[in-house]
Length: 241
Image 1: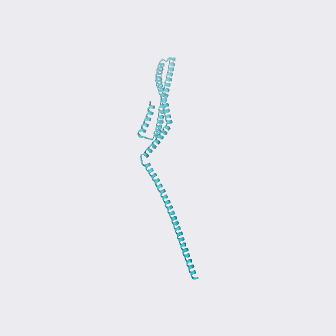
Image 2: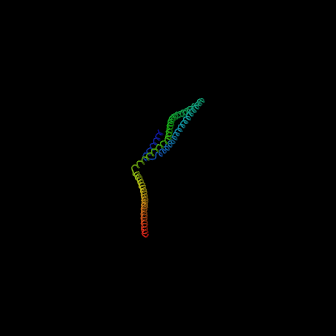
Image 3: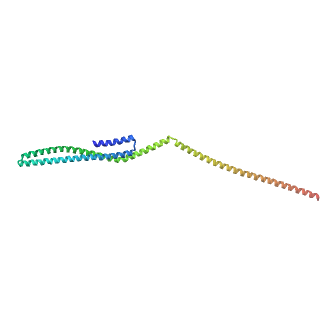
């Protein structure tokens, strides 16, 4: 019972610590394994001490049994030697050691039964601790996954509850607007430049046509004037002749 009580206390103390302090599960599990192994070492010492007591009782039983046998042989020797007085003393000693042997035998048998139970409990305890050690890494991995999932959920929740994404979207829309305005400005400048160039060419073409007409008019006038002068000269010449 002592071994199991110790083990229960170890588990309860660590579980209570984890609940009350909300500590890292990995630290709790590792510390629990340390505590359990320390408890195992202490229980092994207790079982070893119980085994030592068992061996001592067995040795005392055998010693008193041997002494009882020895005094019985001495009583036999005294009887053979016609020393009934010594035989009586030897028999009293023989009975005394025989009684001791019976008592030590009873204690030894009781201790042996207790030691066997302790050994069985110790084997179960060690098996449980080994099993816990194998599960520890799995539990730690599960705890880390759960913690990561919790942090992701908290981050997503905090993002959905604040204006970070709204501000981001506003800036994205603003950039799109700035790009559109810049593109429109370039387009307007291109249109303005093209219109001005076309206007210049049209003015140039208009100027060229006007000068051509003026030149033709001038040439026509000059031809008319020249033709008139010829006619006059001819008339004057005919009159003189």
